[in-house]
Image (tube, rainbow, N blue to C red; front, side):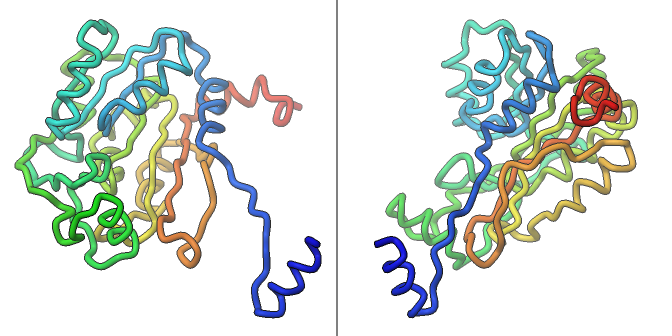
Length: 262
């Protein structure tokens, strides 16, 4: 029966293929194997409503998390939910390449809010708007003047000497976050970086891997894992999470890895 169905589909010029995908939970396993502390220091840039906070609390026993979220609605959710959490530091600011202020687009789904404007009439925008039963022209609800800080300044002010994990999910602003962490990267203060890159044309001027690697690679950070594959033909939303690690983290991994330790 399976062969019969396949022959019919082939007759019309189509082909059934089984595609193996990698779930982002695989990156959780990578993270845990690379960062073995029970209480790592984690910077959560683009906290939204706490999805990554929950994730890291599952991976680690007692993480110390510094979260950054410019959208006041999301920040209020976090403050209410984690009011008694002494190991969570909430910062209602954005993170970028330099200190200042910039207009931030508050979108209908808070996780899609960004400093970058949405590209009109995309499949992604139409699908998201339809799911919320709104006109795609109203997907961006308002623009808010937003404070921006840099990670270099924050770490210096808080006297933090080590960051085990830096997670960046800023809807196209990832390169700017890294540019504002030049001193941290130069001195390999950050051990593991996980960031999301959206390759589809959803926001203006979508980032490429080069846009982050031109900052990371000269500072001896190495690409260690990618969450999933895709392409611009079959995926109207083509995005991946990438993990980069510092040189000393990689050397430590090599010393214990059965695959690289000769």
